[in-house]
Image (cartoon, rainbow, N blue to C red; front, side, top):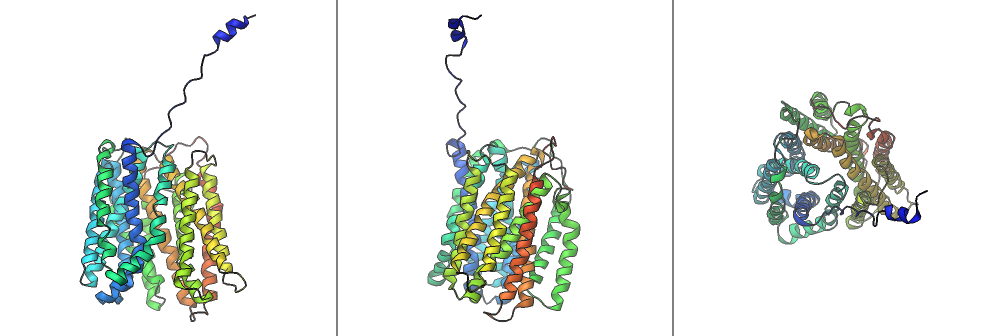
Length: 476
């Protein structure tokens, strides 16, 4: 029998010290985080503000026939930028795509802000889109290489939160600048933030340079990206112009997308294969259902329920706040909910929000329900979208993190373009007159609700099979 005193002496005198917690906002990593958030803030403000300033700019430039192209040009070139950045990041590292992307975006701001003719303005928007595509994919690779897995949820939470302020003040500030001073400041006034973002991010990028282990060249992807981008732009255009020729335009767009899009995504994405493919697909499902419904929420409240544009805009503010709250929750170190459940729960909340918004078409339902509904939808998006981003990096080997990040953004963009195009086609086909379009709005919300429900059912497939290696396979 061991003597009691000996047993006591055998016990360790103190417990081993707990490892120091990872810090997000200290030292070099803190500067990197500030730079990432500033870059996202830059893109977010421009995205939220440009739609407000566009009518004034188009009127001054006498460019109404090219109005839609100012948006299509941005989305088209951004797809090319995303794929290019993914390829370069895997082969060389994120420094060059991020630096070139930020400077390209700034050049686009200057072109658009100084334009004296509408074609030059559209060119500026195209240059902005190319830069934005390069930047967003490069930022994802920076997160993958510069931050441990335990901090990535918090980084994505910070990136989501960077959209809150632009969502709240961006449209109002852009409207005031455009009407009281000049619309050109909407583009030119954000240039100082470019320097701040670069000053914070660039010093820390040197350590992230070099090809990822096992990276291999992927030839022909830029051509595929261009084909997919043109196809998506044609589908987007056809969705807003419901005439006989639009069917031919849409068919041409689909003909370009069918052979190119699958080769820009991990194999099995379009059939929701388990693991990374289903994760990439969920990004497009979430983005498409949310944007497709949100595009018609303010219009519905103004036309069918008689709200002012300002009051209807409260829905967008609510969704931004809900999104930030959901993203914050998934990024908390104390959160123990598995990522697949966060994705599924978020998609379910999105479906609930769309269904509640549809109910506000009834006069008996208070319009305040729409604000609550879209806040719930934003909460779901914050939970699911950030979790999808985290899962994408977790399921991708280092050699494929650039390509996977690009595929994630391509899925996001194409999903939004396709379902906004569908919503636009439904509205154009059923449009009667302001105040008499309840059937059109109801059908749009029903379609987006169906997509969200399908996403909720597919969400568990983001979990890879047991014992499967975290790899996305080679993108063709």
